Length: 487
Image 1: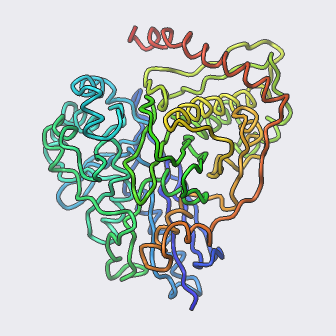
Image 2: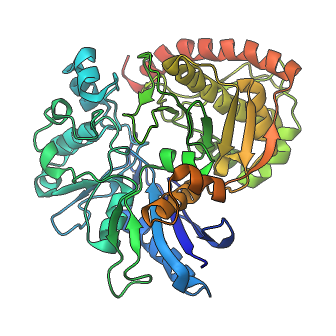
């Protein structure tokens, strides 16, 4: 019997969805962009109902497919550390505060100072930093700046949980996506929730990512079809690039880049998120702040389409004299967790053109990824020789090679571009009982397309420039503080 599945990824810049048979055959796909609003410095907001409209458009499209009746489950994943403040009837009270929003940085510093590292380890299993994207920081900021919104808030939901609630009426979250809120027992950590009054009241009950979160309500396309609870995009995309076993590593490239490694050992290395073990998987993850977002920025600056930058970057061979780019346009996350850092170019001269700047931006993003990967490797006490690569930011062969040269590792790019949606689909297969476990599900759905090996000469140049990259961050940090009025 042929069964079909739907996977949906509510990303930072777009909603992507795939309709596929459970043998991996792609039947149809959907992608549509949604906007990011930046009304004031530090703000990064989105319309939750905009996500819902695009998800509904994807389901409407798939409902018209000849094999729509064979759909047995739907999986949904989404950007993480993006929060929707809803009333008791699940109506959004304000725009969603996305993970890029740094306005709660002051509240985060206060909260983080109130709990010692040993207390964090006891509560969470790792010394996870409370930064501007943490849920309790967002609650504290809303309570302080928009008290009427906070007073009316009944639920604080991640994008996928908001959409699942709209589709099914069931309100849940999952422990993996509840970063910095959940301990090794996959329950909310009281010591963290106690930092913000009412936090425990507005966070939804937790459900396993491979459980059924609810069924689609009557009157909607695919009514009665189960929806997997799912989890955050980094985990879903990890499965979407075929990583699910011990010592396997990933490089997810989207609006931001996420480096990750599955390893049971933990060393306590700071700056890395170590998730509580789940189904035999302990994930060490380091999400950066700006990956594809940096390329989109330089494309806008140059008046080009992002897709046109491939040939532009290829025209400049990176040397020791090439300009150096720090991609901290909105601060940096792992492993620095520095919301106050800002981007910059160094080493510019009149001979540098658009090609040099574009290649420099690609390299700068790769260096941020190398810094994150080094921290992940140290967190697990384990070297990393190869990584599975996927996501929209991995489309460019030129950029993939720059990354391989910068990291000095082999990058195995998967065939399916929509890694998050593919991973959500793989999780849905397990939730619906169509696959025994994630290993079986991913092996049926995911395959490697291209392999990018580091060029020894280019890697030697990149290693020298990486040292300069770290020095550039240190040198620019106090200047960024002065320019922002913080120093």
